[in-house]
Length: 92
Picture (cartoon, rainbow, N blue to C red):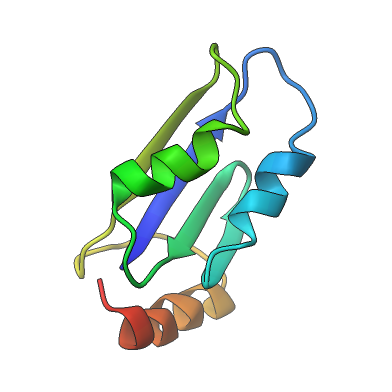
């Protein structure tokens, strides 16, 4: 499964611990500021939330959404290659 995770920290602060946690997923892609695509074999949005919540403050805003096979946008070619290859591996 592939999830979109996007965040806005309130107040703005360093995100080193959050980024380290995001990079622990089986595969990830980060081509937009504060927006990540995360691949997982067996975690759902509530489990991802539990996993990342400890790295976020009470006033932070974020969204976790499972993406489906229907998507569109303007990203670098390597981002689309990541989506296609990862979808083949973990599915949508």
